[in-house]
Amino acid sequence: MGTGPDQQIDDIERLGLHRHHSARIYDYFLGGKTHYPPDRMVAEKLLEAFPGFRTAATCNRMFMHRAARYVAGHGIRQFLDIGTGIPTSPNLHEVVQAVVPDARIVYVDNDPIVLAHSRALLASTPEGRTAYLEADVTEPDKILSAPEVNEVLDLSQPVALSLVGVFHYLVDELDPYGIVERLMEPLVPGSYLIFSHCTPDFAPEEWKQVIEIYKGDGGSAQVRSRDEINRFFTGLELVEPGLEVPHRWHPDAETDKLVQNGQLDDAGVSLWAGVALKR
Image (cartoon, rainbow, N blue to C red; front, side, top):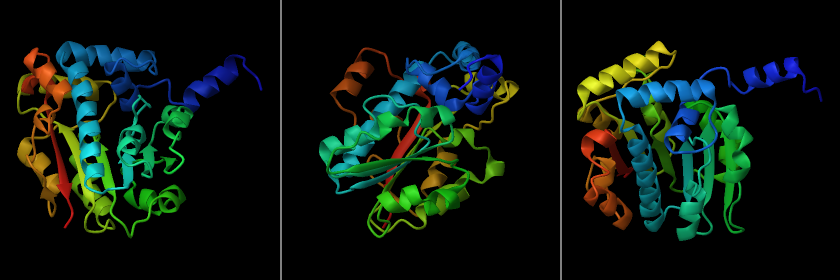
């Protein structure tokens, strides 16, 4: 296989490395290593406008871990994680299989770089199973009908749908509420939705600047108020404490320590998060 300039250009375009991607920007905020010059350039602009991004990314991931343990502890054995992002240990399957060794997880993302690193997402326990699907959250029917989903998950049994830090990339024109409804529709009663979303509620001027920067660099995003985010849970029953900033959703010792040290506050995190049950 050739490795000359033409091949390198083809690889860059095939993997989308010539433009920034939300998954790789998020990886940069988390201190990961899978990001490239376009990602870093946009990430640094965003950090200048809103320095809390690193804290928010970390807090968001901690929420996902706690929420996954919570639903696993309430009998959920199956997870559909859409908007997976660059693998960062512990990944979702590592968290839930530590609680439920036979748990099954399907990861979904639209970044070919995530696919290139998907081996880390497939290291299941012997009792459980994992799979990876390259698809976009805006194509719910494609996701739900995919062999990767239907061979690994039994949709006649409850499933936890994880949409963590994804929907602020979907503007209203993409019908984000309809997408969540379509994804939850085939899931049986006893299923859960794990959800988080950026909000301008605590720092409106900073977030106005953030959105302008992101759109100016060719990205698409829309942050939403608490009431707007609460609409994503329509028809579902939010578990206690309801829709909350993530560091106050079932905090653990690690979260409490960060709050006490002044490393987590509402404005710096600027997220609403919740877990809801389908009755």
